[in-house]
Image 1 (cartoon, rainbow, N blue to C red):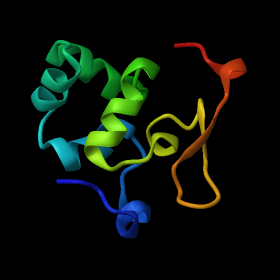
Image 2 (cartoon, rainbow, N blue to C red; image 1 turned 90 degrees about the horizontal axis):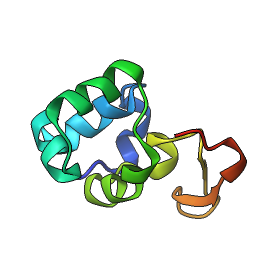
Image 3 (cartoon, rainbow, N blue to C red; image 1 turned 90 degrees about the vertical axis):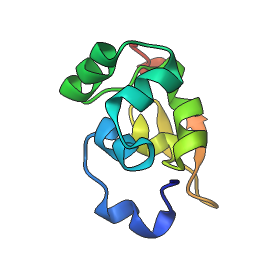
Length: 92
């Protein structure tokens, strides 16, 4: 299931919880990213998704990159998707 713009304001604040709507389980996210379920649990606990996974998770789930990783991406003006990568803020 893809997340659609009409429900963005209803999404949880934690980016992993946003992905759970599309993927259904932490195991499914882990399989998609080729990481352990424990790694996804750690992301959820910290509220941060590693930058390397953000774009592919965004494409699959429909959750924009700026919602999954606001520290590195800014909301685009036209379509609500990523337009800027904040390289100077990258710490992942």
